[in-house]
Length: 484
Image (tube, rainbow, N blue to C red):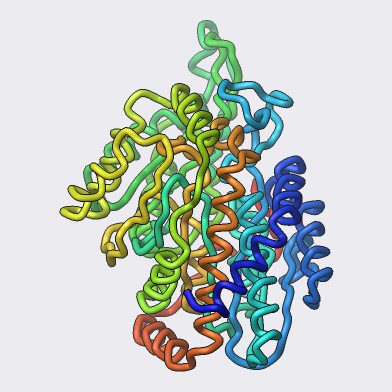
């Protein structure tokens, strides 16, 4: 690392307490999808304090904003998130389940540090650009509603990524990595059945059972698993069974489906088949059905040029540092994890990395904090998850970094993740990610050939591809309010 890069790193460390305070406050706010008013304003105000021009209400979304400094090309962009998850309230620093308020939200995906870490990178890169007289623009996107709202799709549809050279982001995790695998596209369905209520014993012949319609749909979609490609994942839940009485024919029931696949088109095709099954179930039960497409997400368009740059900077920065106190806490909370948690981690690595996993797994087995930087490999498989970051990748080269912010093997979207959200390890992981992202941006500002190579790869990857927005027109016209 040269002196200029060390200077950039020192700025992030100098403002450590400001970033810890900001992320801690957002953890306290714990605002969910499209409700992140205080969180968004805190980050926007902090960017203004550091000399950024901020446009609030970006893309017509109340809790979205775009902050910018500098002018001209290249436009180096950072993606920030700050939304929490419902029903994951948990006291910080506890190693047992202990909600602050039962049923309240909590930061079970650590977006409180995601948004702040990306902000730290943007602020440091702005100073770097100004100190060394570099041309270009540093931009920060305040992206709401990653969890269930697809806020970035609204921003992409508004053209907000069209002039960017790239989008750099990260995700808090239990490992140190550059995500070089794909992510799965997803389609979300809500299915409602309307029947006729009746007493099942005396007037069963007059009733039309909505709950039975959901059961028939479930049976049909379970059989469907044998007739779709192996990458298609079909998951559902009955969200309203119509009532608790077993001797009453339920006149209403509701279920939701998440259907994932390697590509958007495969997810759409499977979702349409599930819709046909639901309509068949309505015919069999003589109920009425409403099928609502509630949006979805696309698969990722990877950019290996940008990923390699970020990985090289990762090697310069190193994995998340930790203390003995971090080790002790992680060892204690690890006792609360489901049996087989480490085995699951190793199984996922085997799936993604193949032969490389045989070298990687022994380096992390038995550890409660992952201190290994995973090797960079172009992974052809898809990670079993979905994110609206993927939709940004259809508009500009995109990279995602992960750093160890909590104990290895921590279950995702869990109270354990919320409990670790204010731990020193979590904040160290946040600033480690900020350094990697800022250094990645710095190289792009100073290396036009790298920017050109990144763009050339992106243009080649997009040949013959046309982006199909996973959201319905109604959703685009009514963010956060189109659900039945």
